[in-house]
Amino acid sequence: MTVAHWVVQRALPSARLARARSVPSPRRSDDDHSRPEESYLVTVLRGVFAYDRRPALWPARLAPPRALLPRLPIVLGLRLFPRPGGAEALSLTRALAGLSAEARAAFVLCSVHGLPHDAAVDVLEAAGAEDADGAVRDCRAFAADEVGAARTLALSEEFDACVLQATPTDLLRRRHRTRLALVACLAGLLTGALLLAQLAPDPAPVPTTALPAAASGLRAADLTRAPAGRWDNTARIDFTAWPPRGSRVEDEQLLSRALSTWSRPGSGTRVVTTAATSAAPPLSAPQLLYAGEVDAHAVVLLYDGQRLARYQEDLRSQAPTRLDVARVDDADVTTAAAVSLSSKSSGARYLIAPWVAEVQSRDLLRPDVLATALDTTEDGVSEPVPFTAGSEGGCDSRPVLQLRSSARIAERHAFLLAGLGDLSPVHLTFTPLPGHGTPPPRQPREATGPAALVAWSHQACALSDLRDTDSRAVNAWDFAEQDLPDGGGRAVWTCMRETSWRGPGHVAVTLRVAADGAKALARPVSRVRSTALCSRFGQHIVAGTVWRSPRGNWYALAAGSRAVTSLTVSGDVTAKTSARTVAVRAPKRPRFEVSAQLATGGRMQGVMDEK
Image (cartoon, rainbow, N blue to C red; front, top):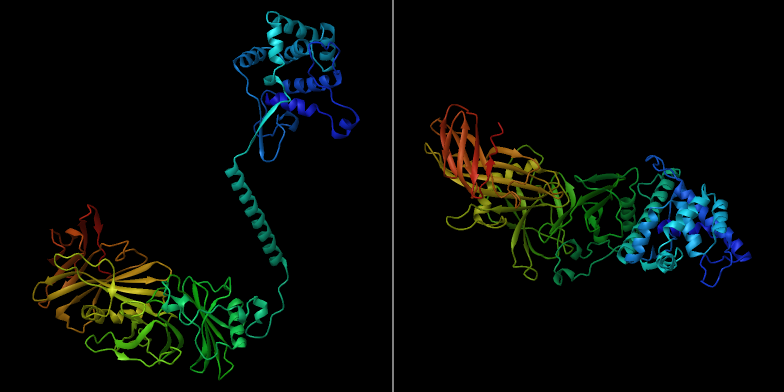
């Protein structure tokens, strides 16, 4: 039926000819014995014969000619298809399918239009039939028994090639395709704009250190500013709650230079970004956090929802301006509690969050010494604080910030931040040993309690390895303890995990032995980079190392976290135990491996001594 519709549609005259003459109906009534308009019938039949003589097998690699592709009329928003017939129509269709195209044409001429034998032969020959007379005889024999019934059925709407049914297309699919078309058009426009921008000649360089604010499209008046009391009345405690502070928050020229430098730094600007941080311009006007003077520098601190940008101008010399950009996405009440405004070899001044009620400093290497108060200005700028990870080779002191949040937003809890050279100091936390018969803590705790301060006093010197590494937080997890032989005393295994703003984390496993002394540094065991170990997604760990007792004997030590049910040691020494720790007498500097069975049913390979 699709082919029939297609042939009839192609036989219709053009609009110009249609105005000159009317198209006769191919149908006729029982009382009308006049000869139908042969020109129209001849055109239709020629299309039928041409389609019937098309190549039986068209090469798959070639598209068939357009004339050989049947298609229905296209109406946007509608789906067209022939009317379905009943059982009698299906029976007639199958019977006609057994005839040749010329015999089927003769059947229509004789049975539907009622043409006599000679007239039907003339029409068929005019249309290009090869055996017109034989076709008429075949159709007469086909319809001899039931001419009336066949003719009546052929005149019904099921066989009318001019009758179509119309239904709306799939509305959901139409909407989806419309959106896809719009997206494709937008992508094409953007691609064209980018190509034009690439082909356009570069503008002449501007000799100044930063382009005017108008060149970047951002103005000082566009900067967003949080109300002064927002932090006290919001459930989102991060940089979005910081009000603008500083003596130059109304200095539009300074703010414009900072915006222009971030949007398009001049040739004389030093741009410093942390790992995996883009220095690209902000997509919209950023939020102003600070604009003032710190240590003979004009400083502007901006926040675009994902990054901090610190702009600095030297007020005493013509030194190049500097722009520092760092990721701070998903900052919270602790990681958004302080930002470095100035960095010198002696330390840094921090801008303290408005929700911090108490600012102190303490030395991690002296856990028994109380924290001391730090002076801050009315704008929240602290006095200089030495870096936790000093550039010098010694490890005599490891100062950190100890801040306490306001009772108006939290339970007035204290937390530690360590300055490692980046814009944001690192949040230090602690996970204690699991108690006997009690479940372990579900997440790290603040490192301000006695046990946490003692644990960090043995790990603090290792923070020097994290200087300028885009660290966000460092957690010290005491995952196992054991009694050592030969009077070695008590030992504690610790997994120190550093997590970056980018997401990946590195771990360092250490062992601190009581016989080494209360102020001794923890012994390094192993380092693993880019791992989920010692995190909420890697809650189990097994480690092993070589240890020499006070009596000079060598031992293979191994320990596992709480879910470990048995340990297996293999190599120069072998052992198996159902405990979570093991100490096996060994030859000098033995080589061995350790694995563990977990309560979950799985097995885990241990991280080993890095030496």
